[in-house]
Picture 1 (tube, rainbow, N blue to C red):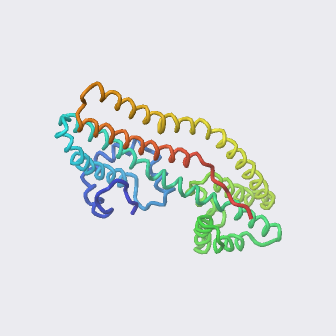
Picture 2: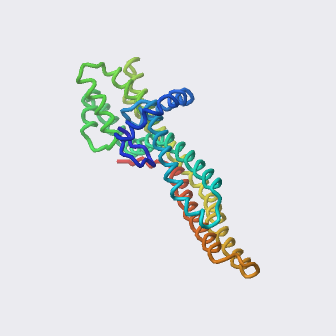
Picture 3: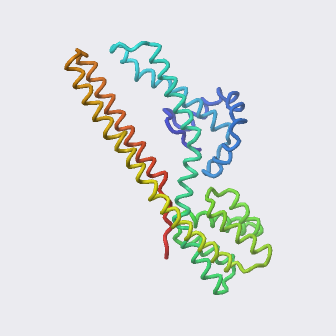
Length: 294
């Protein structure tokens, strides 16, 4: 069972509690048709309605967690209404983060698959040109050291050994897989088997296309670094420094109170740390997957 992020309960207990939210989850699921696809690509064993129900349950508990964490703000002059509104806003933010979690897991799988995809295809290309039967090649790759690629190919090998046709097994694997590049390679193999074309030549074309695409992605990533670095300097370095200087100057003219100044400085620190994390996430999200070469 997939773990729900920001959940204060273990998955099994959360699942039992989530039955109270199945009604609203069913209505919500109609507006999220891709949720089941994301769950399948994340290799989750639960359905979309169950996952959304668990997300509602986890976020409802987080509302009370936020409420307890923000209650000390009453002693600093914060109003109860403001604390309730902030708790609701944070809860809604957590809920939508939970809904996007399966897609995040699928994206991680894409990176792991594509890191080893090119050497696996190169191995396949060499063996095809040497006259090795396709099924034997699939078995060799599934037993090789190609990480997630070996695991994925192993699923097709298992289906074929269970009596499934090679074409159907590879088509099913392509439908379930989150990696566009991996699906493209599988579709080329399937089309070659259906039409009787040279699969080795088709795989060679895929390898060349992937190599060119990787160069393009690296060049595009390099062009994105400059504006991101400027954004980082402006938001995470210059703005906090100017804010801190402004508060120090302002406090020399106006008696803000020691507690107020501490709250402001802690707030600036928290926001700065948050922006650092966001910036690192943006850099990591835009970084292209570097496929290794043999």
